[in-house]
Image (cartoon, one colour):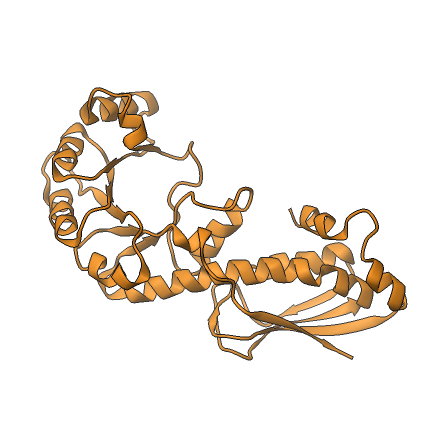
Length: 276
């Protein structure tokens, strides 16, 4: 993945600017520095970007992924061939700023609901081919991954139900098809649908676009039902923003799905300072 990213930047002729103006044996040193408070993710990718260009590059990390940093804090010192460092700097920063932005947004959401013990959960709304990295960044920020892909678990949504006779039928068919070791989850948007899903044996329920009062009642039904020997994990979803997180957590849901973590988080401002 890092090799592909570097190849995209280098093109057919490589870094023609550095080749034109910098001596081939010139050594340089640089520092990666956070320009703002945040949580870091992607340090290994930054290291790989530099060392893929030149394996002899020395990358001294001062920070681990998942660690909070302050503005002005040094993340790493990097030393090696100047041409190699200049060729890799943008790829290293692109990974580091993007993933740290996701980790920072996740950590902020986790802190907002910490007193309620509510999971902050990401979705499959990821940039194509970056899902593994983006979901890793969510974990670095203290969040929880939902499905990595369509093969991880069953999630019956409204588009599936359009081709089924009922919620009960869909849940029964899914449980029969995948067996007892694969989770069967279903999305509902009314309490009547919730009751049907519980009775049918759904193990996890996505509560979509419900107001806070309805979420509270839905969470109570999931946690007090007697159809199963265990409580049902319930997750609120549907365009929930940061300003509503605390209210949703207070309803008693087990998790809150936040699509914006992976599709809209702002990159963390990280600078790269060369030392002459």
